Structures are given as structure tokens and as C-alpha cells.
Image 1 (cartoon, rainbow, N blue to C red):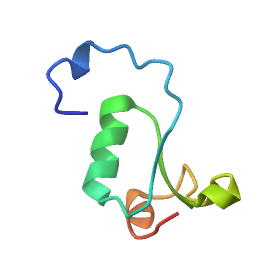
Image 2 (cartoon, rainbow, N blue to C red):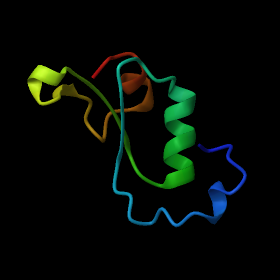
Image 3 (cartoon, rainbow, N blue to C red):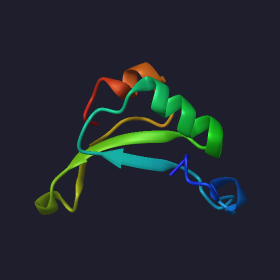
Image 4 (cartoon, rainbow, N blue to C red):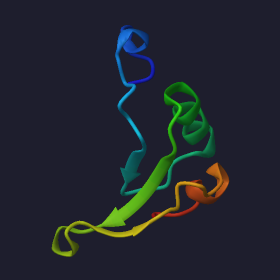
Length: 71
């Protein structure tokens, strides 16, 4: 998404946080996303039966902490 040609032209000002899940996210990608969008990135883990989020990183965790967890 960050490399899409029209990314800079999109109005994403309504974003307050981003959530990714299912696997760890590299610290470099967390920092890149947060810098490009100006919002915190949280990693979650869940399952459909849990409606759906069971664990989630804190929005103020460091990128390194968020990168080494599934949520």
C-alpha cells in the first residue's frame, strides 16, 4: 500500500490507528507505516470464535516490542 503510486494523493486523515494480525510485523515496517500515516500500529491475534480479537499490543509499545509478538 505504501508503494502504490497514488498513495500520497489519498486522504487518510481520518485514520486514528492501524491494526495488523496473524503474524509478527518487522520493526522497520512498523516504523515506516507509522511515519507515513502518522498513527500508531497495533498487532493483534484472534480467532472467529473470540469475536475476533483475543490479544492486542498496546498502541504505545515500542516497534521492537510489537514486532516480536502475535498480539
